[in-house]
Amino acid sequence: MHDGIVRTLTDVRHVPELRKILISLGTLDSNGCSYRAAGGVMRIMKGALVVMKGLKQNSLYLLQGSTVTGTAATTLSFDIDSDTTKLWHMRLGHMSERGMDVLSKQGLLGSKKIGKLDFCEHCVFRKQCRVKFSRAVHTTKEVRAPDSLPIIPTDEDDGSHSTEENEESQEQQYNIARNRLRRKI
Image (cartoon, rainbow, N blue to C red; front, side, top):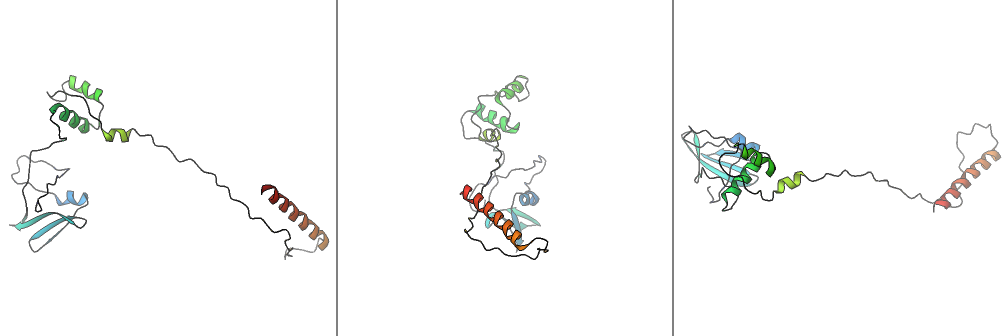
């Protein structure tokens, strides 16, 4: 690129008859990049970082830097069988090693030999058990009332009971509530 860093584009379409390599701005936009063109210079940014820069020539923006095509390495390993095994494993949706052996015996994976599959972190995450959170029961402590609460008359008294009966029933209710609080504390 323009700053000397090698960048890899994913989700690209290959047209063998096309002589120029075209980069879709729509694909870059869906990957979270934004672009701005002004003064004959187009900048493609991801956040505040300028990822690519191109200069306008004949109504096309040509990318500054060089493009590397035809090299797709999945891992840095000297074992070619391991590379093809890992590539087929990822390409087939993280298929098991046994399933790939069956496909290889049927000749569906090409002439390459399928080797031992290395550790795949994505497969481990997929097999993880997801546990639901259990419901928790929260208990709160009641506030202890003072020993002597004043009796407050209410407007709901229709006069059918005498005030002495009212006071006695309120005192009984108060004593019941006070005893209940004492038992809990």
